[in-house]
Image 1 (cartoon, rainbow, N blue to C red):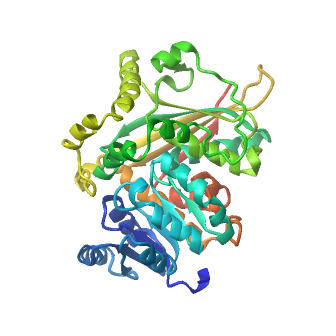
Image 2 (cartoon, rainbow, N blue to C red):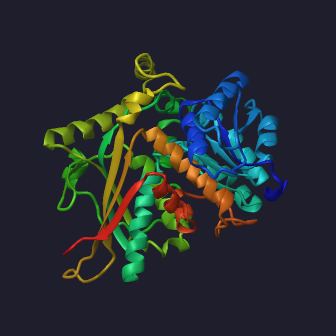
Length: 420
């Protein structure tokens, strides 16, 4: 069915889950009042309860439709044919339950967004459905939540700032998680703990290499980590301070590098673009603890007994921090981007900052919903038959008003050049 004839502009699939509720609430309070949208899931009782809560939240706007959908191909095809955009907040890990919605959207020209952080699954989706999405014109953007939209958008903001001001590319971007207060939900923890049940270590390593999702040959990497940094995870940066290994870096890098490859075949960011992700460290001991915890913790998750023990003490899927706890959360990213200039006596560096006050899951909902409205309402260069494909948050920002919508929704951003 043509996009113009579809019943809805946006459908939130998995709306009664932890992140799904945040998404439904954000659309209720912030989306255009004439937006035609629906909430979808398996339980009619839960959806009707949610619809009542949404009505109480904002009685003056058009209320969402309710779509009861089982996780079968037939049901999902019927659902995606009704909407321009599907937001898949999913029911359980994407590597278990996310493929059918993704496939249905790719095959039927329905635009798609999700908030997974499961790079091995995204790698599989690119391999299987990239050509199909291009043929049907479906804009497919996975990892458009806290993983990996902030880092991807930060790199896009900095590279764009440098390109517009200096007409040159960007070399190394040192991107850090500067400050964070937050607790992962049960769905996030369940995803982490079940990933190795679907993928072996070799598959995970291959799919999570920094350039695994690039659509062209990787950029030149001029900086190589010194041996001491490899062993300890520690780096001292003159602008950002003491840094250590990044929890999100292995997840974010493939998406950022895919954006590099999608924007004018790598020419917009430049041939020497390089992402170096870290976390801010409070001291040398803290840096070492984080580095070794991430290194050996990831290896420990390969062992089934370790995963079983952890599952006994964490939130279950669908659960998460209370709304009162979430109100006190925050997260901030900072980055330094080096302009790709050849004169060592005239270095140019841009500083970027991104901050959100509140729950990280609320922020994920904002990323998803504002992207959905952007795709549903704005004509971008990505729209149209054979103009879709599996894209990224940065690719969407490059051709639309996406970042402006995020800023209006409360995302604080800043980009500026630093003095020499």
